[in-house]
Length: 464
Image 1 (cartoon, rainbow, N blue to C red):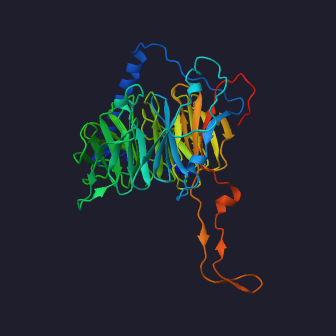
Image 2: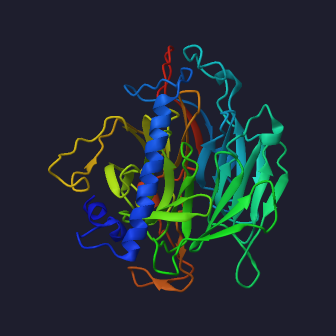
């Protein structure tokens, strides 16, 4: 946490001297962001809306395992480990990505559709089976749902994906067919794969992350036409962000603002319609791999690879970290976290196989005499349990049920020696295979998808 406190962007710092041209430009962007957030906050307070009902969770006992699958990811030529899971916006199906280059859709078990109206009685489904498999060309870099996806309207059943050496694809999640292709070309006119994807909340823009730039496509216009927005400043007069854009998130409460993070440990905030840089945030120890805005749009959560902290950034005071949340991330694998529909709870997996939940409403007290950054504290855990024997890389809250999906698995390395070696007795042996799996010695391999009931359960059932 100390490194995070020490590494706040120098572009946000002021030393009391007359600001330079660069500082003036950054300050102007920060002020613009602050004003936009304040206006949005006032609008939310003045809006008279119908009551919204959110799932009710219980954290006093271990969760109940409803169903899952391991067989689906066995006997693959690749290791078959999962790379995350995401519930559809309407909650009817779960999208997963695996190392075998397949996107799989699992339907919500029929017994659970009315569980939000009564206390959960159980589920007859024990083994999940994919209702759809979508094959990409090679390793999948990123994937996301269309924000308007609804199973009751097949035209909105869409998802986007990006894979090595291929353009970005928009798939029909109802039929499994290719709906559209978005091609980005490099300086030698070769197709370049996007490293990260995000569709705007209105479903009109497709953001694709590349090296030192974000390309924005019109979802309704497939092809190569796009807007190229450089993240690295060439004039030296505005905020600059280098590196490959590893993840992108759009503020649903304030769609004119989006965040793009890079593997060089930075997070850039940009404004529409031109992608003007507002500020660049620094503080992570590793490359940033996941971003998430709160439902009210007031804070931004970020997590990185080989980084033990999730940071909570206050967008009303850009550059200020409100608090951190500690988790175990010991590899370069992307470890997802998620917010429940109310934004009250944040859940994350880790490389030890556990899931951890924090109550984001607890708040962190700060002393008026201290710098806000120096008073940054770690938020205590609200709930923690072990759900997998291997790395829990994906977690996803269901949009209207107290149901949590998890995915597991990671790459395990094996080293084989073909040269002759001598054993301790001095005799010679050949083709000796050496088990070079340090993680496997202490942690079992498990490639699985599981559904956990995190609400009230009125029957005796085997708990997690």
